[in-house]
Amino acid sequence: MSEWIPILVLPNLRLREPIGNGDIAVTAVDDNRIVDAIAEHPRIGEFLDRFTDAFGDPVSPTVLIIRREAKEAYRNTSAIAGFRDLLAVSTIPNARALQVTHGGGMGAPVWAETFSIYPWMVDRHGKDLIGQTPAMLGSHDVEKFRGQIDAGLPQHAVEPYSVDGPLFDEVLLRWHRRFSCEEASWEDRALFRSLNMARAAMLMPGGLEYSFYDVGRLLTLWISAFEILLHPGPGGSVGETQVLNVLDRAVWLDLRCADQAVEVKIGKQTTARTVASELCHRTYALRNAFLHGNEVTAEQLAINEVPLLLLASSLYRIALFTFLNLRIPPIEDDADEHAIVRYIGTLSYWKDPQRRHERAILKAAGVLNAD
Image 1 (tube, rainbow, N blue to C red):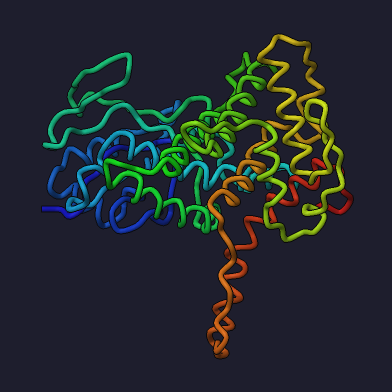
Image 2: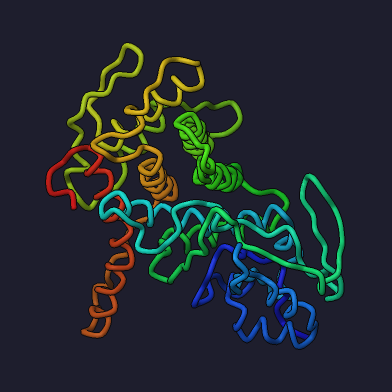
């Protein structure tokens, strides 16, 4: 009996190396764990071989797998969605930051549809196809299946360097904590509710017909993602001031981001804040204008040629990192030469994603030499 169980597929995503840990992961179809599952249930292999793009060219989907002996709770729909949301939020903001500063995401995905879960999958007995969405519930024969990736989206590759490692590692630990027990803490529930909203905010505004109204709708979801994350719990409240306060106390590598030299007015109160807070304030203003039916122009959706829809993911990543209280681990006092070399790699692992987002924020703020 195979040790790992294929649970579902993500056909818009292509992987070269698996991402996950000893209980749950996403991986390519040539992974030995998938090969073992196919040997036990050949129809899984037939199903995976039947994916193409819109023109009939074969594509290889990504498979989400769970260890057979893992906790049953990890197979819950909410747990699986939480892992998918974590993967999206650990990947897309990185690519968007690079798109802001370099004009492209270096091949990594910038829209959340890349992480869409396919509605059909071989059943747990390895026989029939089962399809389930809010709109349908059905079964069919694998032999008649013709799977396709999203026609409006290319299949994107995610390499290990595309993933925000420090963020992914910490939230994966919290994923285990959140979904391994019935009584999760408010903080953990808020975290995964927020990740789910952030993933929705990173969906494409639409197809050929999309307009700036669609962009405005997604900006409102970003504000919700911030406020869900930072809500203190029953009896408490959160609003713009609390969100901006979190951005102001973030730990920055570039001191231009830490400087609280921008005047931001909320209500009747004006406060000196960071450039990240000022940019988030602009996003709040747009959200309010869209929701209340006030006049909005397409020009307001970008600042210094940086689309606020893309920038919002960098602001969210900074808020998320601060919420998680993540810090670069210190080097040991008695570190030898080899430990120092390893620590240099650790610094790069932690600092590279942070620098990407800081540069995107500085470019939007109009700071010279932000690249």
